[in-house]
Image 1: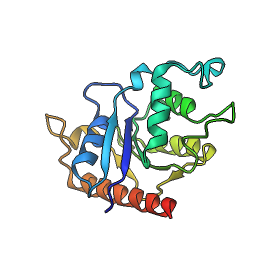
Image 2 (image 1 turned 90 degrees about the vertical axis):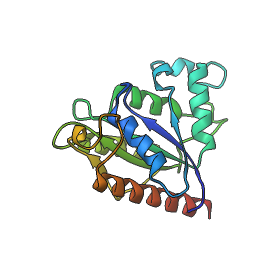
Image 3 (image 1 turned 180 degrees about the horizontal axis):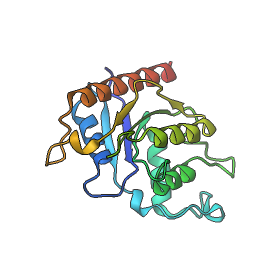
Image 4 (image 1 turned 45 degrees about the vertical axis):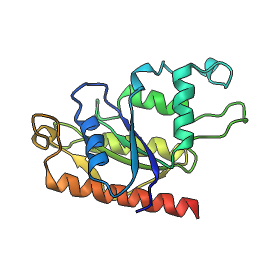
Length: 189
């Protein structure tokens, strides 16, 4: 597998997040992708269209946009809150999805994206992933369809140090990353 640069974003701010742990597992169990976990989600302010232009964007937003624009693909791990994606994740996507001045491009346009998620419930993050896929329809991002990585009953899939120990989930993550790499390869042709 060619080494592509991937920005990994966890939709959870929790220190012991299973979604962030999924991203660490992706770093460990992949075949050559350069996966960097983004840790600035907490710094992104609420979306404000009045500030959404190159001159007025908050520094944390400008940095996120730059990083999304520079990578070959995104890997997002989302928990499920109230049958949907967390507000902090949606907020960050809102900031990265625009170009009101028509001068800088759309960082998410045709960007290859892989989605996964973990939650302690029996349905995991199924509905959150569906909601996230709907968001990426609007941004015209190129989302990996299969395999789906839904770590339901996530507390049973990690050891006490937060390491993913479930072989099925590890295999699904490996498949998801292979599919993401293939999408990136096709996008570069």
